[in-house]
Image (cartoon, rainbow, N blue to C red; front, side, top):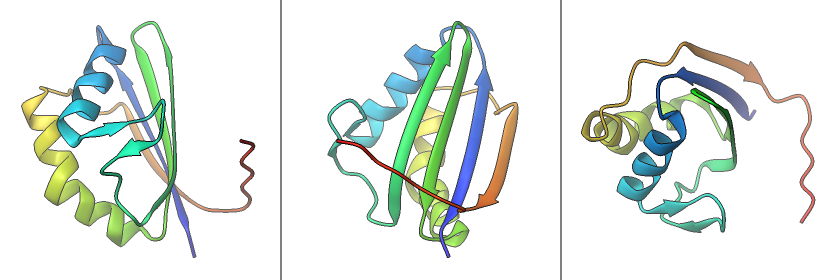
Length: 99
């Protein structure tokens, strides 16, 4: 069953940090292009000043944790990403996409 992760950050220039991490990963959230991991089925981010929230749907928590170890963690380190203020997991209860 799919899992939802909510990750929140509160840091000066949070949006700039988010954009830097995306460049390091080779992904473009505005177009959906790039080297997105196959087990990631949905990614949404929002910002308000120094706050940033990312909500993702993964095939499983295990595959997200592997992505964190192999790609996202190193990108966080390179971009000097601060520790998130919140990381919370949920079981997917519903999903809708409009294109």
